Image (cartoon, rainbow, N blue to C red; front, side, top):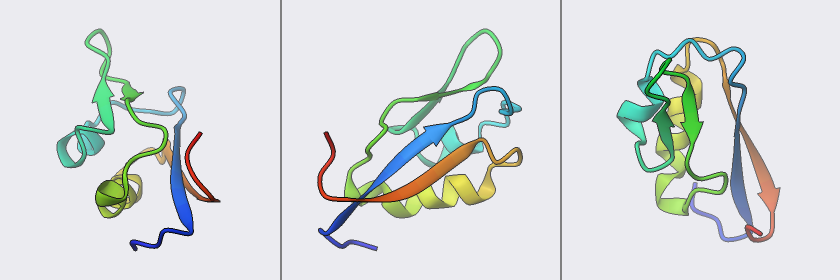
Length: 77
């Protein structure tokens, strides 16, 4: 999925996160969890291309579908 014409933008919906932690296990440079309740924290809204496959996999595996990934044209702000 490495194509320089687009980037991935990641968003999370904390209100539906169940704290399973699968995202953190697969991509800890992009996701973390809050200590108090395990809810996902987003570390990188625009991850680097080397992380794209892992980020997409984390979104697919998320049991509550709290992770959204969209393709954006251009460069990260």
